[in-house]
Image (tube, rainbow, N blue to C red; front, top):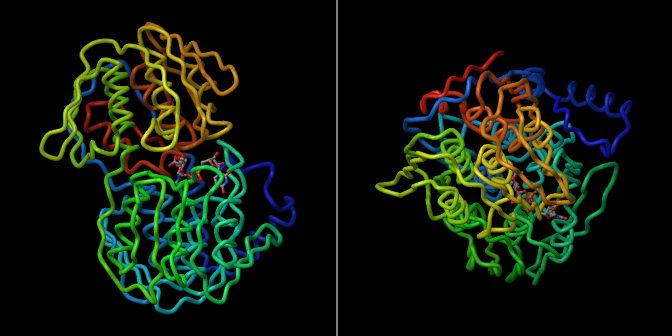
Length: 457
Ligand code: EPZ
């Protein structure tokens, strides 16, 4: 069970236990065990650092594009085929949730065939939502397709409270009545009608949920202050392939002209830019060179600029990103912000890089209120980091020393792996189910780059 469960969970422990028992009885056992087992795996990674990296890997499909695109299958009764879907725990959870609602799901490697022609439920239960907050992405498509949805509030997580008030505000603007009832978002609407919606802040899944809600609405919807992330653009491309009429994805103003229905389509998920950035940071921290096949340089300019500032040589040639780092990195300062600025999902990895860099780097996190959980673990490896509000100041040290550390959230675990690769000696990273949520076969890819890494069951 993820230990990052919030103290603010909507139900008291006892009722949560009874609900879990009820939930288990409502599911065929393998499903429950599979999710619980998968999530509960207490595997560790053992990394012997200090050696330079060298090799070639292929970047997987983007988790944060695949999750909304898989949810879009709810919008049509026709078969929807998605290629380049990464093998991740979060994707497994998303597919279980869709199956639970009656979507037929067939997976063949990286291709998933979905058909939502006989939905049996329009509910996303707490037991699944609490293991993956992105489950909230079924809310918009369910409202568009069926006019009703009961989705558990995701609750907070390790990196912050992460409310969904903007998702709800947008649905109400589209004509839905929404109420919160024992920890669930309960939404009803005869038919959604187009509206002009301006979210209070840039929200990625908020933009995606409202875009999916609007595709079948009556009339045109304008999303202002929309997220410009490449994953939003990828979702819009998939929806347009299904017959939606979306213009402006990638800008802060997206226009969606409602249509009667969507038809089937086939869509290939974009490459994961955060996985790409994570491996690039590892090469800069540990030194060496690598080729990342399938990486999309155009979705990572802010990250590539910072890696070059740290001293890396990077170039994009025939569909791969090549990086070389021959010297000790120079410290860089950065400030996270919505796309196209520096992504918050790369903040922890750059903190690890700064730990071994020459100089002092200031890292300011502006998106989430508690995304410095990796700092205490990095300090166990000998890092010199001080936190003042939402800015961490990192003074690079000559060498980190391996030690046992514990992952607390997805990108924090990635930053511990980056630091462990640069550290002298052995590091064990515990609770890597966090890592398995967002990185496909991380230890295999690291081994392909020459790292000394072992997964310990
Ligand atoms: C998406 O989360 C990503 N997840 C996150 O990646 C990523 O860190 C985040 O966007 C920011 O880029 C997926 O795409 C599945 P937000 P999301 O809504 O959509 C506040 C990873 O590591 N907010 O853009 O949940 C919110 O609290 C994950 O792969 C509200 O206040 O993030 C945050 O401070 C971690 N009310 C800020 O806005 C709302 O209704 C941005 O959040 C919605 C958001």
